[in-house]
Image (cartoon, rainbow, N blue to C red; front, side, top):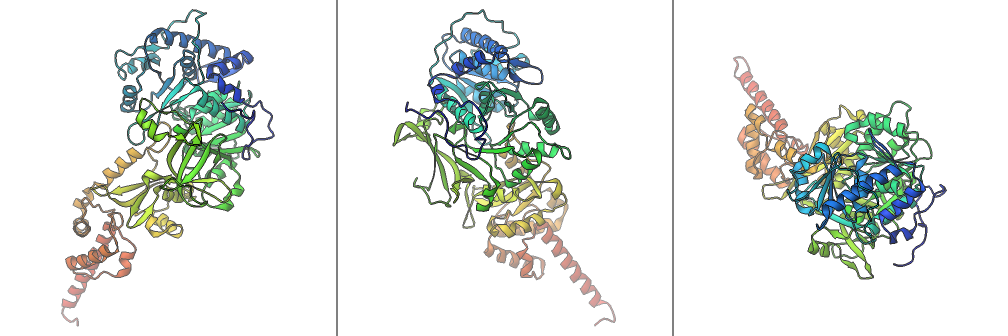
Length: 632
């Protein structure tokens, strides 16, 4: 390995004056267990892990991990593969992670609260040598894994006799296989070694100046990459990690526990942090917190406003951007609100140490600052590849021509580098669409909606024709308390002031909440199913013959099926030429005259049906009046 400096040189506005003991590059030449054992010897009685039922000191955590390591060694003798962990978020999950590593194995963390079908896919693909679980979950696990895979029940396993020799663990040995969230498609297993895991802890420690006095929140599921920092950032520095499951506690419970536990590093996805801010009482702040760390989803300047309301002066807002493949992030920064002067978009940061971030065009060539391109990350410390998929790994993680020890990963994210050097996330390359001749990134539309003060949450979907061609954009919106009473048409009018007309969603649907995965990211697969179900509901047409007649004209002219009363020309994929054809056919069918400015408002089928019915009623009344005796 090339010699490295002992302390990272740049914190990007972080706590540079806070005394701490830097995480040394020398630790990367050992294992996670080497570092943990050194911390245990140094801080045997300090609190290490706490949940609602358990408090474990470093000595107690080490003993539990050693018992688990002995049990893993016994049942996996002669068996190849990592060890799966299926537990709910609790204090024994970090102990299981450490125990598997101490046994010389890598671990595969599964979230017991995830859908059974997803966990079955992981169980079938992981090739686990054994499974760690507890109590009733252990019985459930036997339905996920083949009968030949032994299950270690932490509630029933016996204490191991002391003195069992540990296997030698090298820095390049497998540490974990973490499966992506699987919001779309089949989950992918991404694997990493001890060296890569330790490097992530190194840069996290040195950026935030972590020390033994810190108390880190563990609000992420231990099965996702974000939890790596909450667990190992604490346990490899003598600090403590505190299990705070959001679904069990709720926003008010989270506020209570954050304050009661004295949390100093609050790590959350943006939507969870927004709920925490909303749950604070008048004048109440998160007093003990010194850093709020937001990641894993789109962040807006509105989050910075909420942050300032929720914390004391002098607290830092730390933001990162990354993927599981990047172990864990490639860009970060401590938010300086002066950066807003360089653009409305919220920056994702600058490259973390020992990673290079390049923005390239379709040909792989770097683009100029300000231009949108794909984000490419190069480093010795990104993931090793996709588990049990060598060809996919070869294609996705090619060797860097300039450094044979480094790998290159094309993230699929689109970004732009600003004039101040910060990079903004724009959207996903694979979600970019071409709609009526215009290239559109749905995430950019989503961002424009989400930054409105009237909006608490938003998701933008692409509606497609039966042949898969993009037909229109639809937005699902959760209104903020201050936006209650706002109608979709009001929000449409506001968006038309900031977005080109072709980027304004043809339909905006206000909902109470968006479906979310256990890690609190938007569940876009479920939302797409909800939208598809909504789009195919034509029951309202049967109840209103005029709506049904107008819908039939729309379907015939635009060449679509399943039009609903809430659809309009845009939502059904029509263009300006088809509008003229539609007007002609409606005028012929209903014997009316339609003014040009009416269609410019893109009325829904239901609105148009009501207007036509009113016009026909007025015409009938006029005819009746003219037929009365004595009228002329």
